[in-house]
Structures are given as structure tokens and as C-alpha cells.
Length: 182
Image 1 (spheres, helix red, strand yellow):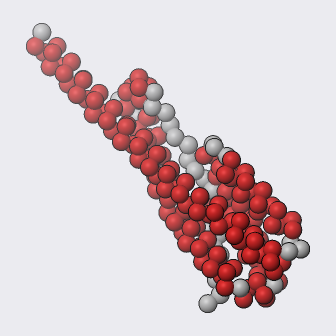
Image 2 (spheres, helix red, strand yellow; image 1 turned 180 degrees about the vertical axis):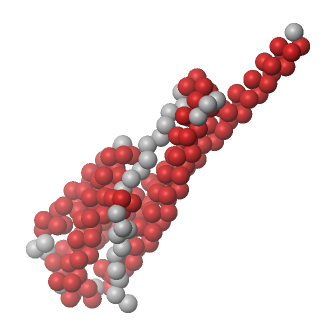
Image 3 (cartoon, rainbow, N blue to C red; image 1 turned 90 degrees about the horizontal axis):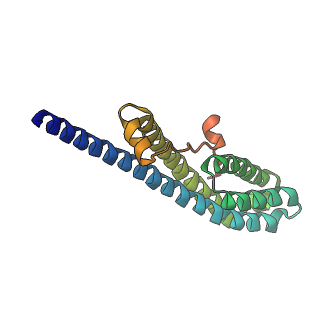
């Protein structure tokens, strides 16, 4: 009887430790996502300013500007982390096309407002890249835990699920960088 009580207590303590570990990992994923969300919000806030600045110098680049505006709207409205990665990748490419316009428009390249927006976006992209790596590492740890025995038993019993990785286009190829003239 004493052996049964000790075994039950050991299982209970072990289960509680596994549960607490899974809670910590899930909270780490959510905190890491919050960091990504902050950077995406910063990027989304800069896009209308960038479009306005480019429109002032290169207004007839309407298709490019509309594409960026539409992608920003889609990104803001997208809730799935996996789909958001795809939309953000397309937005990244569209922003690269906008920055390429400075070559064709010397007035745009000379604009201090445009240059400051470039610097701000480069800073956001750097922070976003770091936040993506941290988030995906946290997702990896959580997903490993909910698949591994004995954690999987506790995970299934308490409804812990795997998290979705955040893959944006720059992680699948070389990192997109925005060059700034000195």
C-alpha cells in the first residue's frame, strides 16, 4: 500500500512538472509571437508613409503603390500565422520594388523623408528577423515537447497543441536587405 502511494505521488509530481513545462513553452511561444506582432505593426505603420512619400515623387508608379497598399491591408487582416508569413513575404518583395524606384527618381533618392523611412524599415526588418528566429525556436521546443514521450501524454490530456512556424520569404532564400546610400 505504501509503495502504491509513493508511486501515485511520483506520477502526480512528474505529471505536474511536465504540465508546468508545457505551460512555460506555450507561454514562451505566445510571448515570442507578441514580439513579431509588434514588429509587423511597426512595418505596417510605416508602409502608408512610404507610399505617400513615393507618390509625391513617382506618382505614375501607381500599380506598384497599389500593390503595396493592398498587401499591407491583407497582412493586417490575416490571422493565420502560416498565411501571414506568405502575405508578409509578398509585402517584403513589393517593398523591395518600391525601394528600387529610387534609382529611377533622383528626387526620391534625395528626399530625407524617404531616406528616413528606409532606415526605419531596415531597423524593423532587423528586429523582425531576430523575432522570427526566436519565435520559431520557441515553436520548435514546444512542438518537440508535445510529441515526445512522456510529455505527449500530458499534452493530449490537457489539450496542448503544436504551434505553427512563421515562415516569411526571406528565410527561404537569402535575406532581403534594403541598401541605404550614405
